[in-house]
Each structure stands twice: as C-alpha cells, then as structure tokens.
Length: 195
Length: 355
Image 1 (spheres, rainbow over the protein chains, first blue to last red):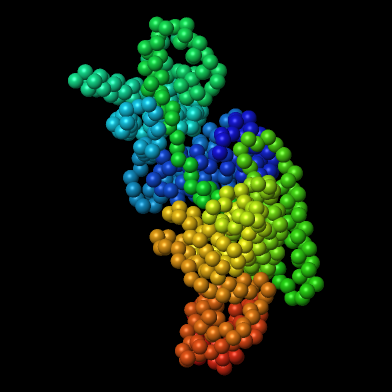
Image 2 (cartoon, each protein chain N blue to C red; image 1 turned 120 degrees about the vertical axis):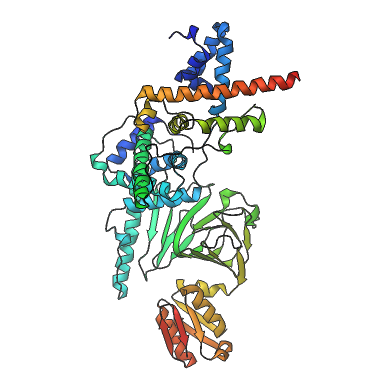
C-alpha cells in the first residue's frame, strides 16, 4: 500500500472524529502494517500485538467525541499503541509474577530486514546485525523509528516520550557505532585485496 | 553549524542529509546534490556518512499477513457498527406477511447502507474500501445479488462482507463466516474455463476461515464455522488455497467435497466425492431423496449439522429412501428419518442414536 500523506491522514482523523467510520477504517488500513511491524519489534507476543492494535482503534472509535486534532496522526497512533503495549506487557508480567524491567521492550533486528545493496554480502550483513544488536534497547528502538518508519527526531521523541535532544543522541551514537563497524569492514577488505 | 565544516558524524546526525540518502525528500536530495558539487573538499566525509546511512536506508519491515489484516479490519467494522442495527437483530418469523416485511426492511437497510457508504468523500490516497455487509440471524435465509450479478444465498447465522463497489476488470473478493451458496457469474472470455491459468481480474474469491476459494463462474457451497471450513462444488472448477500454508492449490471438480480444519493446519487438503445437491439443498428448504442410501443421508447430516450419528442396526445403512423433507430444522429432519426407518431418535447434543 502506498504511504498516505500527513495531510490526508489529518483529514481522515478529523472525519472520523466527526463520526465517519470509514475514515477510521481507512487509517487502520493505512497504518496497520507499520504498527504491526513496530509491535513485533517491541514484543515477542504476536497475539498481544494484534489485540493492542485492535483495542487501540476500538477505543479511538468509542472516545472519538473527546479527541482533539493531531499534527501527525502516525506519531499519535505509534505513541498510543506503544503505551497500550507497555501497559499490557506490564499487566501480564505482574500476572505471571515476572520481574519488571524499566526498558521493557527488547528490540532485535533480523537478516530479512536489510537489503544491503552493493555491499559485500552475508559477512557485511552479519556485521551490521551484530553491531545493531549490541546497541542499547532505546538506541535500537530510536533507530527503528528513524529508518524503518521515517520519523523525525521530534516525532520519535513524542512516540518514546523522551526529549528531542535525547533522541538525537540515541540515534547519533547508534550511527557512530555502525560507522565503526563499516570502517573495520572496509579495512578488512583492503587487507584482503592487498594480500 | 555551517555545512562546510561538517565532519562525517555531523553528516550522519543531520536529518536533511538522512532524507537525502533515503531519497525521501526531493528538496533535500536537490540541496545535497548541488551542495557536494560545490564543496569537493568535503567529499570523503560526505560519502562515508552516506555509505553508513545507506546500510539502513533500504531497511523495510515485513507487512502484516494479509489474512490477519483482513480479519482485524472486519473486527473493527463490527465494533463500529451502531448497536441494534436492523441486519443484526434476530427476528422471529411465523408467517409469510411478517417475512416479506422483514425482507423489505433488510433490503431497504442494505440499500441505505450502500448509498450512505457511497456518499462520504474526502481525498484518500490509501485504498479505503467502503464495505457492504450482509448478515442473517439464526434460522434466517437471505439472498444477495453481488455487484457483478453473481447470486449468493446466506444460511442462518452467517455474514458476508465485500467492497461496496466493484470495478469491472478487478478481482472479485468476498469474506464469509457461516454458510453460503454461490452462483458466480463467469466474467472471463467464454473460452477461458480453467481457473488455474486465469488472471486474477476474472477470478471470484471467497475468503472463508483458513481457505481461499477461487473460481471463474460456478456454483458451490461454502461452510465456515468454528475453525472448520467445508467446500462442496456443484459445477465448474474451484482452485482452493490455504491462506497460510503451501502455495500449491488444490483443484476441485464437480461433486468434490473438501473439509479443512484450521486447528490441524499441517494436514493436507483432501477431497472426496459426494452428491453436491445435498449440500446446497438448504437453499431450497428441503432435501430430496431419490433411492438414496441411508449411509449417504447420514454422512450428509453429519457433515452439515456437525452430528455424530450411530445406528443400532447397521444393516439399515443400505436401505434406500425416496421423498422430500424440510431441512430448516435438524430435529424435524431427524424425526422424519426416524419415522421412515421405523426407529427411535435419541439426541444428546451432537450425538444421535437411531435405535
């Protein structure tokens, strides 16, 4: 599905607040895939992800009369969804008497997500993955929102409930670490070529 | 910070530079292309930063499974429906007049829903289909004519959803829970009879439970309840696929019955031969037997009503029956069967003993 523009999403948002069921269904269609993918990044529990998205939209419908206009609908949905997922994860943890973790979301990356074009193959990819998965959880999440969903620093801050400077630092430090990996890889290639 | 003194790390952190590498913002692309042409001294840092970002720029998350998305949007639609909508209210019908008023009311409701669905307008770059929904209460039947002229009879406690408008030359799709009998219009050129080689735009697909039933123009029955989906083909051809599972389809011929249990998804799709007319007999409201072996009637009752039937005297299985019985009510049917065979009917839940 082609991405929907921010303006079109904002219009759909206003239409659904006015009682247009079709408009909310259209937003659901437009953002289901990114929400689902983000949820699967944050949680290993597929059923929970599915239910949280469904509950989020049903709740939006029930509470439509009290909702305000929003600037970036996608960021609003991501933030609300993340909040739902955190609440539910926490509830399930308490239910099963599991220890609570301040950074509850474990973001991991997999091979399939990177189509590393013009790059040197599987080894390069493995290095990148290795480097990504050594980043802190928050760095991984911020990087995901930046490069998979194209959010600006400001919107990532909104979604993750951090200030913009913190997000900027998270992404920047993550990119520096990846740069290091790439440098090493290039150096190795040069050595191999020389030998 | 002026761009002229940018280091690799400064390029990395710059959102406009990130947008340039990702090619997500034409203005950023134009700016950085002309910028680097004018600042060749920065080329090393510029290209190194671009190389790092390019590693991530092609990253894409996998989309959610289509069947999941479809099921979830149906759930959302259901939740958004106004409480007490006419189509959702069960109604007792005792005589013909009440029934025709009911039909008129539901037909009107359907028209209103379609018209209302067609009125809303706003710019929407994403596909936002308006849905038509047809539902029946327990014991109720309903005939639906689809936008392409295909006819559907919905059995009781069933629901059919489809896009409110169908464009000619587009794939036709409907979503079913419960049971329906389909009589599908053939829109492909007459010479094209084999569904397996047909393009999507001439196909008609029923999404039912864990199965996708694709046809060109045929008559068939689909029953999808409680995780089990059953398909019986009366005429033509069906191409059957599991929504999750191996992509190879199963091709059904007239008289084939395929049953699929979503809770045992690893099992292969298996077909067996039946008398298809029995399985669509509910549309006419009566079952016609013509020298039909009792064994076959029992198999039909077990299939259609989820019963487990045992015979006190196994020899009765070979006995043949002729006649017509109403089949709206399974107890009436069992009673008729008991009387014809001169046996007593004991029914507990879905277990039936004929003794």
